[in-house]
Amino acid sequence: TGLAYDSAGQVACGMWMGSVGSASFYTAATVDNAPVLVAAEAVAGHPMLNPVWEPQHSRLLILLATNPVVSHGYGTTLADPVRRLRENQALGGQIWTIDPRRTESAALSDNHLQLRPGSDVILLAALVRELFADERCRDALASTCHDGDSDRLARAVLPFSLEAAEIATGCSRELIDELLAQLRSNYGRVAMFCGTGTTMATDGILVEWLRWVLLAMTGSLDVIGGMRFNEGVVNRLAQIRPGTPALDGPTSRPELVRIAGQMPVAAMVDEIEAGRLKVLVVTGGNPLSAFPEPDRFRQAAALLDALVVIDVADTELCDLATHVLPAAGQLERADLTLAEQVAFRSGMQFTPSIVEPEADRRPVWWILGSLAARSERPMFGGAPLDALSDEGILAGLLGHGPIEASDVISAGSRGVDTTPSYGWVRERMLADGRWRIAPEAFVERLALHKGPEVGLLLVPRRESAWSNSIRFAGSGDESVVVLHPDDASLRGILAGDWVALTTEHGSLVATAGIDETLRPGVVSVTHGHPGSLTGTLTSSRVDVDSLTAMPRASGLPVRVDKLGM
Image 1 (tube, rainbow, N blue to C red):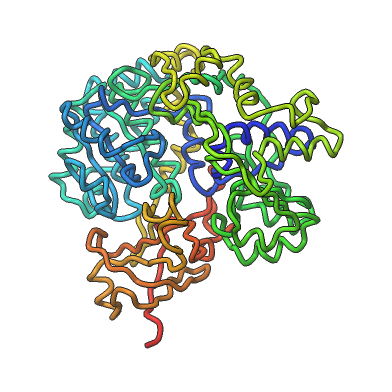
Image 2 (cartoon, helix red, strand yellow):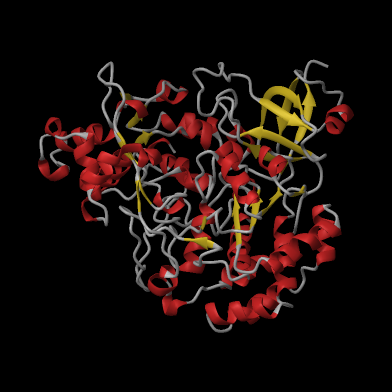
């Protein structure tokens, strides 16, 4: 995800891929948030359409398996999230967290449903079923969704009762009933976003779909008071024409599909082993820490003609690389806020470089432009790279938007706001102006849903202590497997003990942590921790979702054993 927050580098990457004639483009999306993209495309017609929370208008916010106090938002990016949450509550808003752990966000919420991992689908489907008893909710679907969708949806959720939700989640019926009452009483003013706790789990696509359903039923999509959509300044979305041909997926894994035009990372090693992927260029990412089966990737890397790493950090991946190209860091280059569809503000911000790059580090756009020029496929209109600058490249991106580039650059980090728009998605993006709220593939998948697993279950966690300031927060070498005190006591485990965390796919060794904020029966570990590779616990072939190409990394049954006994 490093390149996701380098606007000029991100655009240059797409240009460079086009210059070499390759469509083998992989990102962390297919191990992170592919359900978000697939659900948006199915319901709204475009994978990048993303509803955004407005704390000044919303009166009910539901945080499902997401912890914005630490992550600063997932689906809605939030600077100073604690202040935003408290401001919403001061205006009369209610915040509900649904999570197996009493997260930092749950501690600030008005209510917390501490459910079993994997029971989210049953809970949401039961809420949808009950909302069909509300005339306003039925009318909302009838007026904003395609003909027949409401009836298909009603039949699909019929097996999911509140009694079933109570049993599956392990939460009190009174609390579930109160959440239902809040959904009804806050019609038109509901917001909801989900995080990796569900997107990485089995049937994460159903959670994302049912989120769209709840927002549509409560009249809270594309309206003031509910969740709005950013039109964007640079990335201005256009309707995808029906019949637009899709690119082929990986030949080595024909059962997997591309997601938002991207190749699924679950197939990357297969493509290398099959000889179809010969040169891998990694920009701001690390397959060893992010993808399944890191040992298999290490072996496959030796089969590549070249492994090129463009990064700001010296990682283990650099040791495997044939070429390492050091990139300018965030303070050494200018940038724009190009992640517009998830932005809390409508508009654009610019930040200049703060310090000069050292040790011949170059911005990613310059590195890729240089590679293109050396292969006689020049980018940027063939202009000499040393005659270009960060500011010039970024100004070019702003050239076709509604804000003058000079205004954005002169405003700097204060930014230039645009007026939020409401209703534009239904007017310009949706076929016939209606949501497709009951996609056949999702309805069929819901009928097969099995609910939560039994035993100890693994969930991901975001760490604020080292993720953003690793150089100053300690080495971060020792990862921590966190258990509830009861689960630790049953296994004779104390804080600081060395333990083995094992799934059917592999194991890792870490130190134990004890945390009473976890629900009993839940084990938490940070994905992407530099001290351990959680990809050893997952598989690129078993439990890979056919709709999203996502490997399963949340809700996994695990065993925790104390070492040295």
